[in-house]
Every structure is written in C-alpha cells, then in structure tokens.
Length: 200
Image (tube, rainbow, N blue to C red; front, top):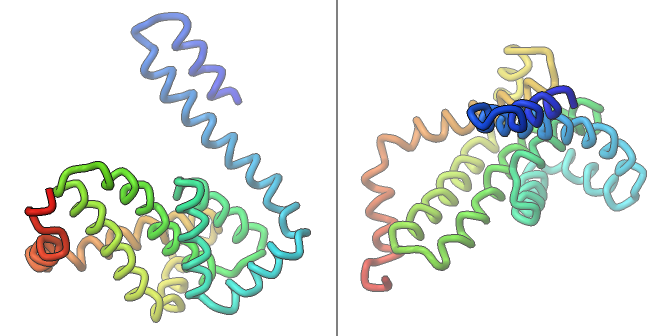
C-alpha cells in the first residue's frame, strides 16, 4: 500500500514523475494482489473439488501441467497463476515437484492469449504464436521426466519457497530457449510448412 500511495502522489504532483508514479503504483498493486492471494487461497482448500484437484495434481505431474495450462488460459495471466502456485507451495498444499509442474503448465497456458490475437494477425504473427506454443509444449514434455533432479536443483539454490518457484519459471524459460537456439532454422521451416504464405 505505501508503494501504491507513493506512486499516486508522484503522478499527481508533477507530470515529469507521472511515468515513475505509474510504475510504482503498478508494482504496489502486484504485491498487494499477491498478499490477497495468500489470504484467499487457503480458504479454497476447504472446497471439496479444489482439494480433490490438488490431490490429483500431486499424484500426477502431467495432470498438474494440464490444470495449470487451462487455468492460465482462462484468466490470461501466467503471473497470477504463478502467484497462486507460490502460495500453494508456501502453505505446503503442494510439493516442489508439483509446483514446478504447475509452472510448466503456466507457460503453456499463457500462449492462449497470443493464439487468440494471432487469429486476426498477419502470417508472421500467426507463426510467432504457434512457435510460442510449440516451444512451451516441447519444453514441458522434455522437462517432465526430470522434475525430480530439477526440483533438487531449485531446493539447493535457495530455501525460500516463493523464490524456488520463481527460479523454476526463470530457469525453465532460459534453458528451453538456449536448448532450442541451435534448431531455429528447422523450427522456421516447420512454421512455414504449417502456415504457408499463400493463406495470407
């Protein structure tokens, strides 16, 4: 709240500080939203269907990925679902491997927004949206067998639950991008076959 108030004050006092004020206000709202998530997610555990979904996700990483992908696609925000994942793991509702699986699903689900926008976009825009989806789906499938060692790495880097989830998100995206980099030309040719120029 102090961050929000500082941002509003800066934006109102001088036009020159309006951009900085907007940044501070936005950051404050994000942290405030995460605090609200911490308060409300705990009460969701009392709902039978939510508890059953979490139990199933803990037992089946693939189901956790699919659940997170659908949830992220519905609310169009991987940031929110990652925040929910942090809260669930911080409250020991899910274990670290399930939290990592949820992060993988978040990355897939966030592709939905780009896919929707690409429906009215150019051929290049549609190719970028499909590439985004392919990279995240392939990345999740490759990471799936290595959830245990990847989780051990995250636990070794820091003991803080929220930081472990954040590190999972960062490392997954960095490793996936670097691993795919040598195959960019192959991916480009595949996209050209999937979405040829003549459909423009």
